Length: 133
Image 1: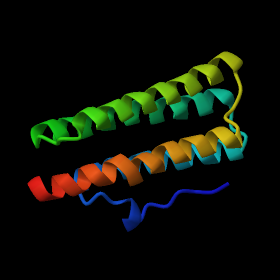
Image 2 (image 1 turned 90 degrees about the vertical axis):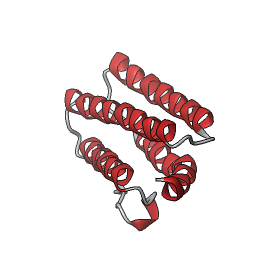
Image 3 (image 1 turned 60 degrees about the vertical axis):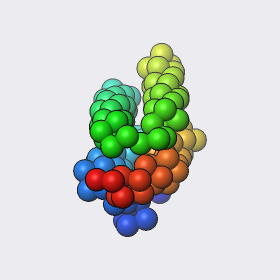
């Protein structure tokens, strides 16, 4: 099991966004540990639900900042958010229907989902916001 570690490479240099990202990394690690430790399906589902809910809130937070500071990439970024939420909700629904725990493959998917978005679209947004806030 690989744990994600928050460090400066994940920082978008916007403190309020970085704090959100730290929380998402913490939730991912809790979920990762729960799966590795064989925790109950109900507990894993609860952690997954919390991760999804926090992610949705975080995405709205980012979108609010992008609106406030007139970020040109808002539409594309918002579309990526929608795609990410749809993919994780699909995974969440599948797990609920099958009443099974996340697999290592699915944990890896969530890691790529989280870190990939931060390193991609969020770094671009952060650079813009650093200049305009």
